[in-house]
Amino acid sequence: MNTTTLMTVTPGEIGGQTTQLVDARLLHDFLGVGKDFTTWIKLRIRQYGFVENQDYLLTQTGEQVPHQGGLRAVDRAVYLLTLD
Image 1 (cartoon, rainbow, N blue to C red):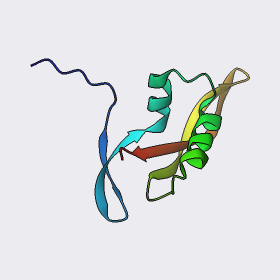
Image 2: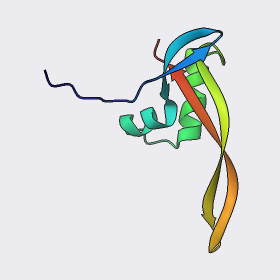
Image 3: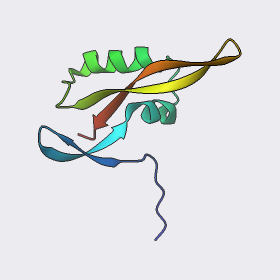
C-alpha cells in the first residue's frame, strides 16, 4: 500500500486530553493561502469561533532573524490546531 503524508500531525494535550495537532503555519503553506499567516489565522479563529486551549494551543518561540547585516531575536506565535 502506498501512503502519502499531506500534513504532519503530532500528538499533544489540551485540557488533560490527548489529541492530534497540526501546526497552523504549515497548514497555511500547504493550502497556498494568499494572505499573510497572522491575518489568515486570526480571521479563521474569529470566523469559526475557535477557543484557545480547546480548539488550538498558542505558544511563543524565540527565533533569530536577519537584521541589518546581523541577527536579532524575535518572538513568533505558534498556533497548534486540533484536527476536529
